[in-house]
Length: 577
Image (tube, rainbow, N blue to C red; front, side, top):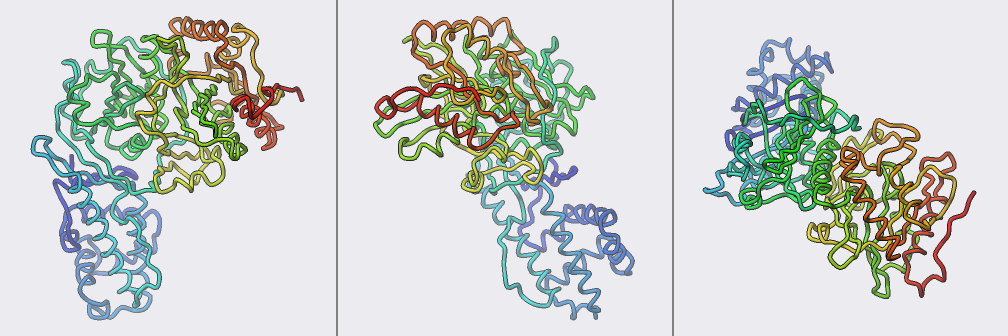
């Protein structure tokens, strides 16, 4: 890895190769000279007056001249260097502020490399990153206060150096022989986030489908280990090793809030179930996957392109590969949300709401929680996007999840939720439409544990009915679930009424023939044993008449259905408008 790498809005600093422990070290470094050259070019495009001032005065024509001035300013006051006019002094202050803003607008990530055998205390890379942050902030304040001629009255303790830090290892991973090339890529061992972390990728929507390819993406592929990083995550019970181009590092960091990170021992002793190659420069603009049946590994490839600079591509490709693995193992992928509710009397209910993006799964659960008052003691989110359902050895319908967090639209959250968890959150383009946040929610051990399912509802956001409707037979239920209808709200590249097989374009749609028997088994079991309430909840979120009142009506019906029988006389029934 280079000591300092900048591409577009991403800046990566390798502290193992170059580390500025002081302002003097910083000003003497080649890395700072490179940064100033980038900044001057930036000024040329964004503030020509400052650019002209910076480059026309004789002693400021070159980067070296500017560095010499900055060195003097770290020791002397401006009037001790040269007689500055009030205007020149103000322009210098504007340049310092502009450079500081230019730096902070980058996605800044530090890294420390270590050989696993030699080892490095986790605190070492944290201490190095914290010291760098302090040095940059102190350096900026010193320049700023000298040029303005007074000390500040208000100090804002920003993370001026980096947004995040990584500890990299060059350990050996248990790849089969065909994938040994990936062992040359540094592995992200530990991560430090300066939260709330705000990331600005180029895109804020996912488009297209993940499609099967007949060729293993590894065949004929040459990867430069200096340009890639590898991160190991647990997607449910599947070990996924993601190797991504360094330009997508900020987006990839969203995974640490959403998935359980794999340890060094995990990847050394466990053959990966899933491999994701992200940002491959092949001019194909592909989002494809391949099943390596010899090694029993699902391999996904996403080509390098500006439009894949979006966290949804990491998340959904990893989930697709995991779902395909589950389908082949006889587990039914569920695109939806599951919560385990514990009531005041100690009884529990496992509630699963299924539906495609924008159907109202999370919104219904949030609304139910809001109106439940003191009926509910506590609840756990088992999954917020993708899970798996099967019948266990006791004949019970159970489900588990894939993610320890949630990747949700800010508009879908109950007012205040994003701010309540802000200290742990990762935000993506929060100032735009379809803004997203990744929130950690549930411990991994609880996510992958099988949980009994008591209520299984389809989230219907398009029909005029209200409340909850229970199906009388498996055929009627299956027709609605398999149709996968919703009114798309533009959260992906779809708008309007659309049908998606089993509301899940991430596995079931690609493997319909294998998925169909799994659906039949679950629905016929429920119809026979009557041990799961099977129906649909009407959220109205895709309708012109959507309102808080309609959503609350649906939420109340869900609460009535889930509550202990001593709390409610009869289950809620649906009613037509």
